Image (cartoon, one colour):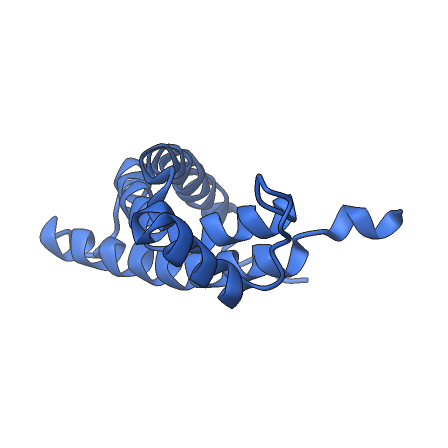
Length: 143
């Protein structure tokens, strides 16, 4: 039924919130460090530098949250190959570790880190480029 559209919504949040809590502060911190390192008077950074910071921060966040992604995927699948259902994140994690080994929680880490790093470069680079273009147009404008 209609509820099928929302299968995995809670577990997706279970993964996305920690991901964002790692990625965004790391991106902002890296931008500050790059701005200081480049020794520019206004500590600004170029869009490509922001893109590189976004790529790195996305890759780190992706790697650290891969176990949550594995758990989310199992929960969304609903059951294992034997037909035994996955019920909640904690029991799913326990089952994976006891039945398959802790290393399985890192399944897919390489492609996940790669794609999210590429996406971070594109997204944060585009964001910074648009911000750099639009900000001067909006300065001094009142509603």
